[in-house]
Length: 261
Image (cartoon, rainbow, N blue to C red):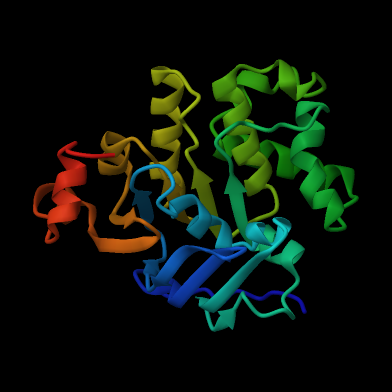
């Protein structure tokens, strides 16, 4: 089944989870998650290690399918499409819902071929079109000026910050509607982190972005809404300003203030 994600009007919900439960074997990793994620916003997922935030992120584009023995209950609606349906083409879904991982993972090929890889897989063979996709994607990832004269060089020779922006450009090349980011700056230096955060702020004009981060200052800087996960549950979900200045739940306040985590 080919995935067609419906574009919602600005500020409307584009991802809705309904009583979402997820299991690693018999281990209950996500418990009745109900979240509405809005278009053209950055939603941050925070919480201590092992709380379920990365697991939740990977349910949104079926990356958890790659782990044997896992199971999902409930619904994940993107537009009016339930992406948990067995009829969904997971490869096509991941084209629409792209992902940037904690560790930059450029392919061991040229910078150009890294960006052109996705469009080629999806049938684009025209060299002129591929050239345009490579340039526009690298520009969107604020990397073009740094690499435009070295597109034939192997991507693994780039710095860590450049590699992470290259991976983001590779995601953008297949024209996603949603971008998932799992601790995208945890391995980066402060300058590279600042560049990527600025990029996130720019990209939300065109994309819906969900970011998992342990860095609460980062969540406060870049996100519009924040969900606090604990023990596989969402304790609180609200505007980022509310979460960080006036949380409703004591557990949230304790985590934000550093009493645990």
